Image (cartoon, rainbow, N blue to C red):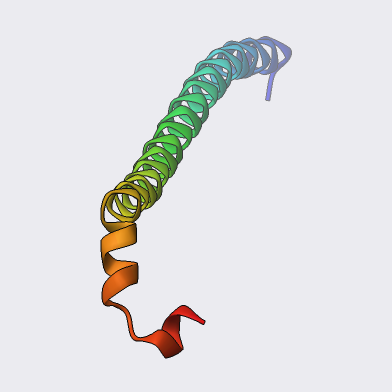
Amino acid sequence: MTDASQQKKIKQLRAENKELKRQLILCRQWMQKEIATMSLRIARGRTRQLTRDSLNIDSVESITETIQKYFGDYLLNLAPDEMVQ
């Protein structure tokens, strides 16, 4: 290879390297954005599920407590003596 063709090849490789670095930066930015988006989606999903679970537990407990308060004495009178003791 002549000196001129080597210089041309080096220049071409540098340009290609510069373009590949630019593409790598874009890919990294895209990946970081995707990771952040997925992390947020997972966190929201977990929060929704925890909220549903909490509401279900609280609702059941609240309903049970209300029924026991309202019917407690009545049910207590109906219960067999062995259960009351």
